[in-house]
Amino acid sequence: CQSQRWWLKSRNVARSTRHPARESCYRRISQALAHHLWLWQSGSVADRPHGGPAMGIEMNVSLLLSAMLAVVWTRGLAIGAEAKRAPALSSDQLPACAWMLLVRLGDFKQVLPALLAALASTSIAGLLARSVSLGIPWGHPDGGATTTTTWLGEGEGSAELGVARRWALLLALSIWRAEKLESLLQRVQRAYNYVRTVGLGPGLRSTLRDPIGHIWPALWGLTRRLALVAVSSFGCSPFVRQVFPAVVLDEFLWWAGAQVQNFCSKRGVNTPIVVDIIVFPMMDQLHFIPVLTNVFFLAMCGYPEFDAPWTEQVLLVVSALVWTGHNVHSLYSALVVDLPESARQLWAIYRAT
Image (cartoon, rainbow, N blue to C red):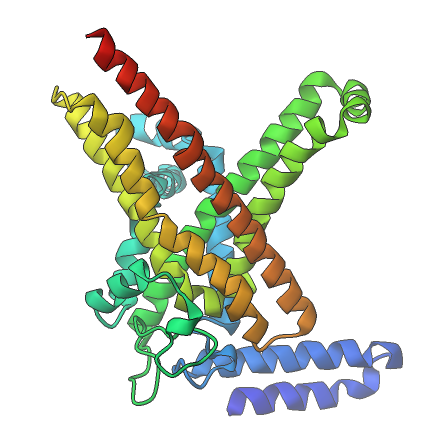
């Protein structure tokens, strides 16, 4: 294409002025830029490297949008509150109002990815089928090693993922990733505030006395959050095809359940205590199970077959396994620790009455 020829021509013209030791670096950069321009011009999902729906410049925009939203949401409502108290909208208040709009967008960060994923899908039925699927690889109808997805219309004879659907998918992924980056920034802030409160010297002495107790919580918290960002960025193609529907449905249903409980409490509707402490937590774990299994099979089968350098494959497999470990711990804590304790308390209340 014209863009590729322009990049290759500019590289050849400037070659004589470059230092020989930097030639390979410049070559890789120019080839990557030309490759990104080609990805931007191609609209087909099947024709792109790795079969991904979002690569090149589109992925760069998605990452920048996620970082911007994460910073805005972490900053909080300070500027937004000032814009809300303003009696009129003048030109100097427009940035504050835009900031407030982005902050308010964070109130729906569990809803918007699901709605945008529905817009990007070929059908709601296909999206729901992929969301509740366990992702077991030997369930492939052709006997392959990995599962297929039809929620984006991939496969032989499928139509191209159009511009509107492609950007809806990118926006859904950007908002979902922004929430994970926000959690990562908040964890970094908590670690920094702890060091600033206790002091660097006392903090180091406490770490030397109890390394596991002081280092492990922060290290694990940062690692598992970084794993989610790595999976949704470097390995976004298999992640979007196999795991993303289950993730957005799980978070949407969790948000919907919390809204129902808040609505009932505000309206003065007294729901049975067994519904609050047993039924709702059980429902949360039921729609969380597909997330756990899909992420696990993504690590075991999806990323080992991913067309990428082996170092990137190792990083993605480790990140998905870290995510799986956190999911297993969360499920274990809910089903083995929290729910039995809630049941014992409920039984004690029943016997007391």
